Image (tube, rainbow, N blue to C red; front, side):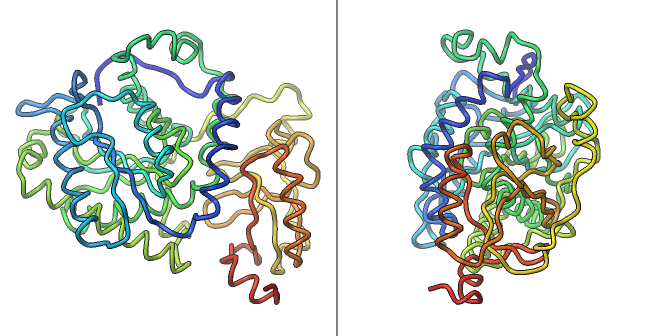
Amino acid sequence: MTNNNKATFFLTPLIILTLIAMSFFEANAQENSNVVKKIVLDAGHGGKDPGALGKRTNEKKLTLAITLKLGKYIEEKIPGVEVVYTRTTDKFLELSERTDIALKENADVFISIHINSCKNKNVKGVCTYVTGLARSQENLELAMLENSVIKNEENYETKYGDILNQSIDYESEYIASSLFQNAHHQQSICLAGYIQDQIKTRTGRKDLGVKQANFAVLWRATMPSVLVECGFISNPDEEKEMITDYWQSIIASAIFRAFRQYKEDLEAGTLNTTPSQRQVSNPEPVQKPKPSDNNQQASSQKQPAPSANSSKLCLKVQLKSSAERIPLNSSIFKGISNVEEIKIGNIYKYTVGCETDMQKITQLQTEIRKKIPDAFVIAVKGNERIDINVAKKELGIK
């Protein structure tokens, strides 16, 4: 985390880039979404960017120490998982480079390690972020501080001119954020929840919960991705602990155990996404896109009741998913008929179709992908998502 001024993300020009990136990377990610073979570990900051400053150390040193320990645990204890590091030395990397590494490596998981800071030196604890709309002023300010590292990059005004110089466009922010967090948002929330559980159990640190914010290092990721703020360097007690090899090993071990649990549950089809276990702790309301007229406003406030098909097992094409409701007349769904909203756990899913024939649902997916490149097939029964292989067996599909 750095102390520069704010940068705003997800403006209108970025939606086109979002769609392009999703079309290139999402198809391959979907085919292997239930197997974890490669993880990219990102030690935040580095080189000319020290990150948050404490009395005894700085963020870039702590993140690198924790990341290297975490990677070593995974390499030694989880055979078959390849670990890729964005940096292993005191090296400066642009934020886009970090995500590019994950994309180029076709990673199954991306974890970025950071250390927090606050003007109030009494604040302490650990929190884990997933990408999404910043749902409180605190989350928004933290994202702005983390994102402000782009000012250390060469030609940053050219590369990020729209981000730095234009006022925020809430509708564009909402759409772009939904596009990028769509396919793996639930998995990211689960991984973040596992990390918080392990850190609370193994370190005794205050659990500040799973949160959402617009971190630049996460927003282009097309795989489950989290950013862990491992403690507050501004708190004298936490900084004193963090500089020790023992504490760094404990926090790395906690994240390792969470990743191992996530991998095992994902591959076994038992990943727990129920709201009682994996609630994103952001009580403040999100500023939604502003409707252009009264009809749109009424439609965004009133969603149709679940269809009659919602109680039976069927195959659907998922268009988007979001922690917040998306109006069914949103431009995201332009040109697509009969979009249905389903709430599974604490996530809203937007789907079309209800088939028991794999060929028919695949044909529908092909048509939908002409408009939404990352659309994919899911199996749903009532308000539960069913493992696709289990559903095929139940439906008698070979």
